[in-house]
Length: 304
Image 1 (cartoon, rainbow, N blue to C red):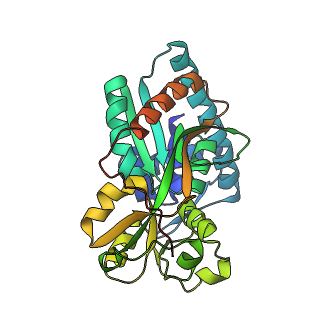
Image 2: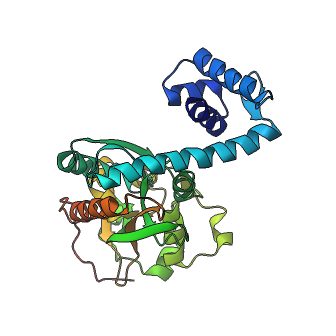
């Protein structure tokens, strides 16, 4: 099992240094473990290069099978934890970037109070990477925007959240644009891969061809700073207002009803023995989602 876990980390990272760091061992120790595994199999698994490594054809097939075995072993451990009817030990939580900085700290603190024996390992990544992590057994559960619509994953809704408009401070007194007017403005977007980008484009009814020349950012913080510099406007989830709007000269307001919104939910493998415990965690997340954050905005009915 030790050899399999080390090799799975190397197959994931494709780099001895990063894999060794992930496994919390030295790079020479990891290299020795992989060489031992190759000796056991009497066949090479890795093509070693100066910077990154490649897996041999056997290595690729072995990595896929090792991943299945490790996930099955983890689920055996989860089965024992489920029989104990309490949450303890490692819990690997994935969260999308437009939720993680604003929601995750409160969630981790709440879980720590409720389950002091729980060891939480958070990971921030876009939705597709979280789904892959769940299916590969590298994550136990994830928090993302629903729906996911993956047959092998369970999903439960936690709460709905509005998107709000961020404009330069000098535009604060101007009428709030409707979707048609917003589509004509210089809209700043997250880069491709973020589900929040797709949701914003859907609200503005913008075709993909219109996005080619739009300015993109890798984070909501970048977008808000660009708005503060007068470059354009953007949409952010309401949970981000308390953090992002303080750091730039911007005006934040609601859009006319029915405004854009998303459903934040929790997902996990249907095969997980910890489903009942995860439902209890979902209740904690719902409670955290209802917590007032001081950043609520007044309704804004005007539209030009």
